[in-house]
Image (cartoon, rainbow, N blue to C red; front, side, top):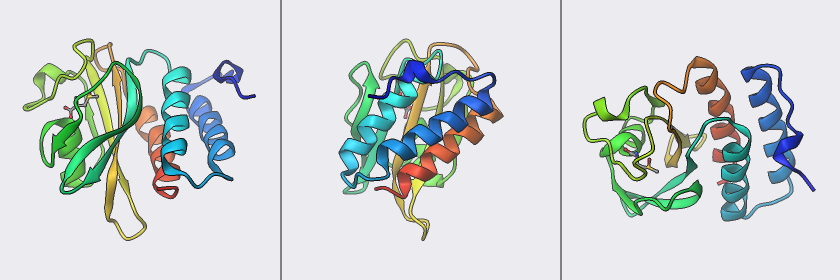
Length: 161
Ligand code: SME
């Protein structure tokens, strides 16, 4: 059995490298997208420090619909272009927000969230599948190393969905 406490990283890049290895090991032989997203959310939430939410929104019928996650119950539907998730979905680009109160249209699902990073999940042909959303109760929690590490996690997941 894999326990996230097994991850002993000396640095943030190392932590994300180990996370990617674990994610590949957990998803390599499994094709079910819900199971893979559920394990990915649990892996991120339990191994990346100082988070209050980690999970997926999937593009369904022109809007984002809540997928597997860890954290407090969250808004179920987010319109394309709305909030941090909808902005990342519309632009097909990673969005990092240091202070969610300063992001116009931010959707406060969990009032504990202070900073947030959202990564688009794209097919090889650049079609949007959904987004990976990670929230922290700390201001400016995410930096370029988190962007790089979570981008690899998002790539692994996009290939499995
Ligand atoms: N804050 C997000 C909504 C999703 S929750 O954070 C889980 C947003 O503005 O899109």
